[in-house]
Amino acid sequence: MLAEFSVIEGAYLRDILDQPRALENTLAALEVSAALQSIAGKLRHGGFRNVVLTGMGSSFHALHPTRLALVERGFAPMMIETGELIHYMTHLFDPKTLIVAVSQSGQSAEIVRLLEANQQKAAVIGVTNTADSQLAQCADAVVLTSAGSESSVSCKTYVTALLALEWLTTVLRNGDLETAADRMKTAIAAVQEYLAGWTSHVQRFAEVLSGIQNLFLVGRGASLAAVGCGALIIKESDHFPAEGMSSASFRHGPFEMLSEKSFVLVFAGDQRTRDLNVRLLDDIRQQGGRAELIDEQTLQLPNFAASEKCFRPILEILPVQMITLALAAQVGREPGRFERTSKITTRE
Image (cartoon, rainbow, N blue to C red):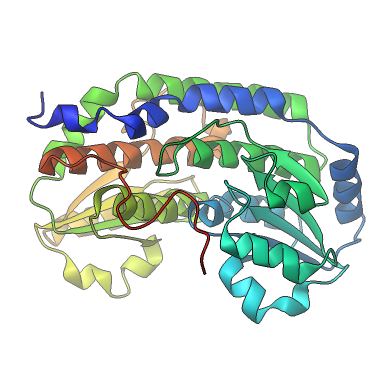
């Protein structure tokens, strides 16, 4: 048992372990409103010139799989941080634009300004965990998650947003919602299975991460969701510097920083670029850096079907959550305790 194991057994850990319930509740509550159906039909029939995917923090990173899925269906979505959209790209607030805005609280400073600046010009689909928020009240259509209350760092709200966005993408593409729901249930079962062994995961990462000074998360494609959100929650949970970037970008500079005090978490991702990610893993180790590959075997979920790759981002964030607990246990710090910020960012 870790020397400071008890320090991590607080509200943040309870939120992490509550993720399967949050996912189940979200899936059960999702429904296609008339407003959402109308917007989806307009999109499929060329009624929108622009599709903008926007959010801040983990909500922004959760949009990576949605962007790729829409591109594969022939759309050309723009993924823009809300803080940039509201100040530098207001020309996109136009009746020919569809905005998918993700905000767990639905009332962060940037989202509130977005709603005010848009003035209902562009159609807005809001994805939020808060039914009485400004986003939920002002959006043209709303997709509600059912994560419940969350103590601090995004975990339940992040994975439920990923699930809701996958469901929304199915609606926008006019896909089979029943089949999608069955695959979502498989993903939820996999989350439950992984979290059942949380103590062993945390202890293993505490050993693997001993003595590191530089921590990187890298991946490609849909794995960029876990890369971006993962680095964010490590900094937020543990006050430990972590950087997330694409696997390709890592070779363009940070590779020079490799040493025995460097640790790189490499996400294997899907088959299109898996070989490239594995090659990067080998090269990191050959140059004296420490690295680990996140794939089905590492997740200890070898039976998770390759056909469920669209739900890989939900599973990929789980080992990063274990890392946040391990880093906290190493230094005897309560993970996820805010000292300078709050759950909702209300100031730009």
